[in-house]
Picture 1 (cartoon, helix red, strand yellow):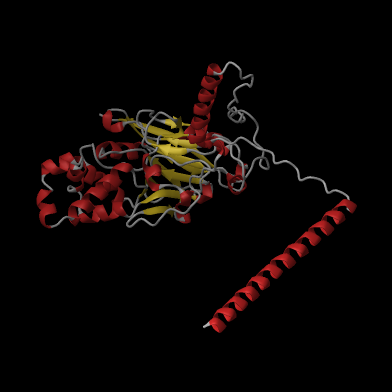
Picture 2 (cartoon, rainbow, N blue to C red; picture 1 turned 120 degrees about the horizontal axis):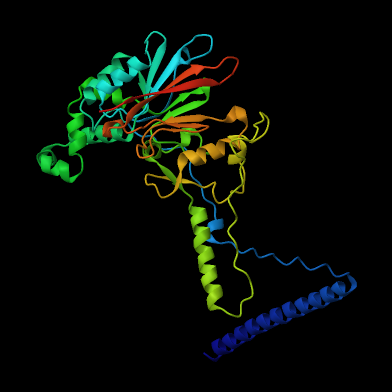
Length: 402
């Protein structure tokens, strides 16, 4: 028993000795290397201290913002873009014409009168409707029938879109849901007017409307036809379909955030009498050339070069809205086109904005002249321009609506 006790004491002492020796050895080696390193540092020239970081004050308005930078998701039953066949595009040589008509809204008798006034000839002319061909007026089926009979082109407007969506939802309902789809329920959902119009259309007419694109491109004339409008600076295939069918104005979130930040800074400065720093000022809008300034083919940028820029001004991030509180999108479109090379500029022909009525600007034509409310039905007649690649001439014709 005593022998085992002595053995345990010996083993414990050996372990203690081993640990202590290892610790002392390690600390001596570390101290020696530290001292040598310190002496070596004394003999070396001192290296310059790293530059102090520059702190830039960024606000929320300086953060990255994008719109139309990503391809839109696929939408069942909706065609975003289509191109007008080249054989229908007018040139100076073929003497063809495009007759582009604003919002018809079921006014078939007035449409017939307008086509007679422009001396429409199906053998040389091609008819295009800017959307909202149906609803509100007395004869939506008659309008669609006439357009189909004339092999017309058209784009989907917000009224076609609502009617098609309402019909699709009503047809998809079964069981209890179908029983609940009474006239009262449809009125509660705001669909009764659209369903009433849609149910007057034949199946062939509904199918024809469903195949219409949201944007029609007439590439040889550098022209887009859209019901409501397009966001400048965004490629057509990246446009939001809802916006193209519904937009009226653009809002600028970066600019609005900058204004709010400026107001906050001014309030803080007023409350802090010890601060001598002036409140940061919002950068002014870009000063763009006027309509009367001479245009040169090689001046300006391309859409691709603008999209690749890292820095954007406050007004280059625009969000389309249906209301009228922002900047009219057509004003922004015309301003943006003047930044581009002449060969990269496009004209947009649109409808939708009956309150503004007919509008003719450098790169936009607004054709909704509020026919269904007693205004006029407007046609833009486009012909090829002599010696002008991508150029066209135009005349405007109207008939009064009763």
